[in-house]
Amino acid sequence: MKTPFDAMGATLPCRCFPDFPDMCACADGEVALRHYSSQPGSPDPGAETVPPMTPDQQNWCLDEIGQGSEYGFERSEYEQKPDRDLAKGVINVWAEFCRDKGLI
Image 1 (tube, rainbow, N blue to C red):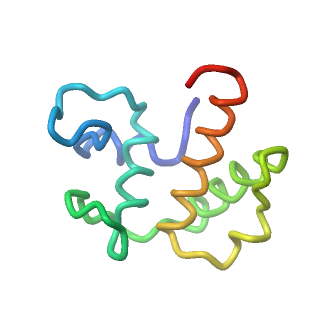
Image 2 (image 1 turned 135 degrees about the vertical axis):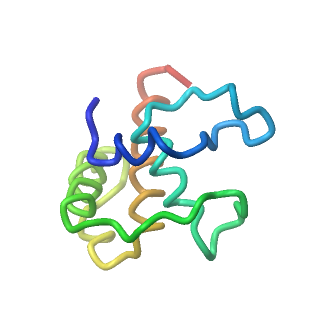
Image 3 (image 1 turned 180 degrees about the vertical axis):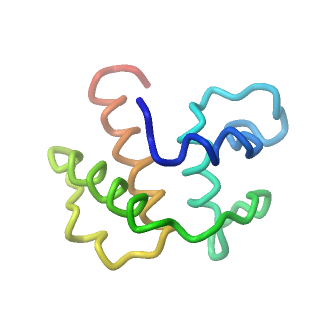
């Protein structure tokens, strides 16, 4: 799946297994989202600093979160959230989708 974070993610180190940087299981967009979700206020100090999300990136995140309504996620609950929380919301929706399909 193509995301508006792919180009940025291709330039960032993977956060899947911080102790094993060559073992990345994430697509580039997910790499970037994991860095956003690990910004100040998060317990992961190893994340790279990333620029603020563009309005297009924020809207894309909100659309992805909105697709998770069957898992209890609501776009409206994230509309005023900071970038870190938008990224966490997307990752959580993806994780719930994968659990629902028996992938994790």
